[in-house]
Length: 123
Image: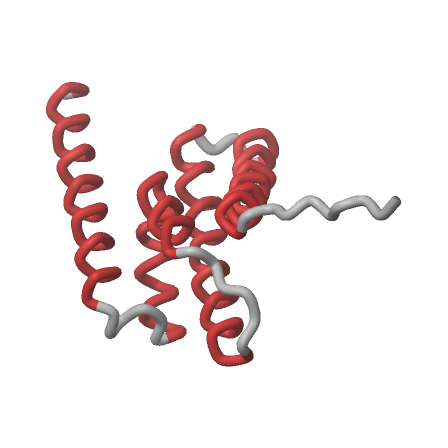
């Protein structure tokens, strides 16, 4: 009897890979370089986000399976917006898709508002 292969959704696959890579980068930055946790996370997630934009651009050109937009937006939302912006600029990726840009801009505005609110609470 033939067994069925399990199908992993691209959202789960790329989201899981992004999470593992981000944690895999943040933990050593925190432990070995003694960076504070939020800085370690932001540096790592931004690098991973940047790399995912480049990877998705390459897949778009070569016809491979793409990184879902939900993953790219999710990466930006959890702190990778700087890497996302860098990926958009360097790879010229997702720059003409207005619906993607609109959501990305909302994420950035929410993050800026969060930083401002946090600043006022701390000080």
